[in-house]
Length: 276
Image (tube, rainbow, N blue to C red):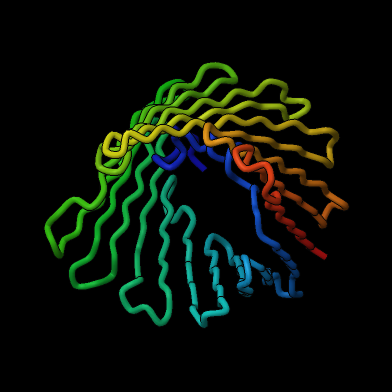
């Protein structure tokens, strides 16, 4: 795989992952098994409030072609076929959702030493075309993300972002929602040996004048246990602990408290992932 600045979605990704990834207020169970022919089968059950959801996903990899198929409890069939590097740095992705006849999409991704480009095209008579690209190096990355609706002739999305990297520190600035939302984020590795890191994200909406600030940290108590915590300016504090019971079993628990309404019960989420 060609090493480069990545894609537009990578701008601010490390901060987002630390602040939002793995936090869950629902009950989730995941079981992954493998057939003798190498097919990966993952079954997931989720209790979200009073609603129970489930899906079964399969993954088959043959040389440089990966096929993912998932069926959910609403009888939707999600299919993705990925062809990895038919030529150096190039990846082709075909996806569709049955029975939605307008969901078909083809995406091309290309990574160069100093650029990353992703473009997608809906497989309809008047498709939505999306283009995102970044240029830069291991210190500075500048990119944009644009969508054009050929049916209406309008730009439905245009975002721009900048990322700066220095040693263990990554800072990013992006303008999203057609220029309405400004997001600044920061991520820094404090201690690589203990997987200790800190992150912060600030967003401002020009239309509603709403500000949002979230700060968080993570730390590995030992090689099997990771703790994460975050708090935002609305008074919501969240803690997350994940522990690997074995190489193939991970248990996670998340608790969120609204400090502005401390009399209310905390939201608690549980997740268990098994890979026999």
